[in-house]
Length: 299
Image: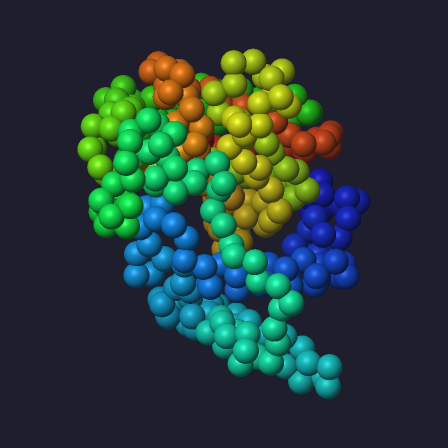
């Protein structure tokens, strides 16, 4: 059946998006941003590893879905023939014979900044050994906490949940932000919206962390973790589709928010408030649920 995205425009449905002329400009810009990203070496936040800011070397990526038995990427040519290609075939834009007028450097979240910026904001002093470039990789993750139940998105009302925190893990994050790691990189913290399922691909959700009152959202941009688009959620929710009905997952870095809460002594309780606010009207009868909201530290 049709999803509740029907009637909201061709671009809201993966099955019809390519029929809208803006689709092609949209994807050209994504390609331009990818090229800018691949030419960027950002400041150490944490220090770049050998595979950071580069296309994956894994053949499952470079050789495309045909490598694992799925349908290969194919594009019709104007003369009626078909061009079958892999990601590796389109990784070099010069080899494809085109260029972009501007390739502004890709940037990470401005609110996060470099390791030195974070250490200064947290009043830790210094930038770490060699300005942060020699710090150990933050390649370990640990669950800080998770919501006890899922969330049902309905109408246009904000949703609020309390993410229960493991006190011992929360204290490890706080110790990192307080400088117990000496010259190391402070923990990075990520918010996950897991197993989002539903039938409205046009819905966009604003996610806030640490709001004292839901009414403060519009005037509290510093607490906006990010926005989550549900484009593709209908297909991802089908049990007979490649996602197996598991839906979409979204990961938002909230290190800058946790830094601020830590500095104002608001990251010391048993839980943390997360508000999910739909942008625009949610169609009557639309069914969208978030399976779990979780918090992870990377250290």
